[in-house]
Amino acid sequence: MHTSFPHPTVQRCIVIIGKENTGKSQLVASLTGRSPYSTNFRGSTVTCETYPGDRVTFVDTPGILYRSDTATTRVALEQLQRHDTILLVVKATHVDEDLADLLPLVDGKQGLVVMTFWDKVLSSELTQQAIYRWQQATHLPLIPVDARHLTATQCQDIQAAIEQPTALSTQPQPMALGWRIEPCPTLLEHPRLGWLLAIALLLIPAVLAVWFANTLAAIADPPIQGLVKPTVEALSSLPSLPREILTGRYGLVTMGPLLFVWAVPTVILYALFLGAYKASGLVERITIALHPLLRPFGLSGRDLVRVIMGFGCNVPAVISTRACSSCSRKTCISAIAFGSACSYQLGATLGVFSAANLPYLVVPYLAYLTITTLIYTRLIAPKSARSPQNSLMIEHRTFLEVPRWSAIWREMQGTLSQFFTNAIPIFLVITLIASALDWLGILNGLSWLISPAMALFHLPPVAASPVILASIRKDGLLLFAEPNTVSLLSPVQI
Image 1 (cartoon, rainbow, N blue to C red):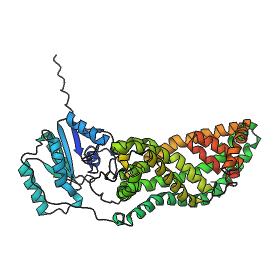
Image 2 (image 1 turned 90 degrees about the horizontal axis):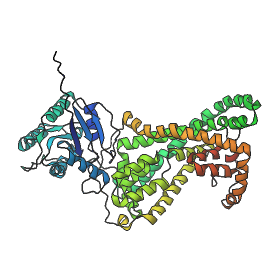
Image 3 (image 1 turned 180 degrees about the horizontal axis):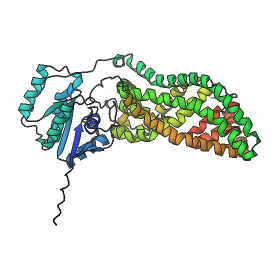
Image 4 (image 1 turned 30 degrees about the horizontal axis):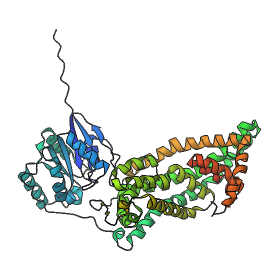
């Protein structure tokens, strides 16, 4: 009996090439049904992401920053050399410029051209005729789409072009389509007011997060404390060590409500605001507005985006510096390590401010972080990074969009996951260790040893224990919010 086996389907690999912020990640997500992590600010994709399909595997490369030396641009060009079939993505608003820059890079390959951001172009008979004439002159498929809302017909056209790819060539010289569309300027582009508005917009998320969390905590704290009090009384008969671990100065029952009433709402709200900024494209506008102020300190506006990302989690922020210029990348990483308060530190710090009923301290706190970080980067930045000739490498102004909840949620997930899966468990372990050390009398001994140092900073001896534990873990700062500690501290000391 003869048995035949079906031939395995050959999996084709399609490399997606395009400049930054052209919607490459959203396009491949719409084609494959998978959600992209990248959002509406430049350099979101910092490594090659693979999207396997039925017969096609898409490789989403980092955006090419023309005339740049970023590591992500080099990664994209390496992928371009390794594969022959290309899905070239250009932006409809700057289509002639993108084609002129990118077609020479893919000369000799085969594939198709997809034109995103078509919703920004007023579709008319004239624009359709221009596309048709371009296709006839170049013998290349040019498919206009809105990557966020891909129609079934557009998906079929792209799939058909992938099945029968066309040779990509700059000969004959492509004709111009003849339009260019720029986003409307805002106050952020104002030469005198832009930087002031940008700084205000950076402060607003933290201020609002603390204010909302403080308001919520003022409502939730009394009933929660009322629920905790009977528990504390019920546990008072336990042996001394378990009682100290559960209801002592740093016990789980004592510190738990503080964490969930004050710190958690602050982190959630800050992640929400920052996610909305990124998804709307506002971060990109802030980047451009603040670049002239940052250049003397060895940073660029592009680096600022990564430093802001560090306020969620330092690790992905450092990874994303691959999209920064080589002359400023080390300085940017140092700025993240020195001045980006991750969700652990930020949540703990803002939680202390809220517990002390001093939410306005968030403004001088952020100002202090900013000033000290700028002084530090000024000292370590190479001279080339501080040069007036070091212009901002950026292609075009980003279109502002009303952020979708799905995009905001994608941005929030990383910060919240880090906070709930790492920061909270570690903080609970800190409370266990602190309670045990307090029960053994070790904290009192250490406090006595460093009390002279506390006096140098005009801090009470009771602040020594939180200082010791906060030096081990950032979220140990929350111990400053312990009622017997925070009540002894003035606003300046806090």
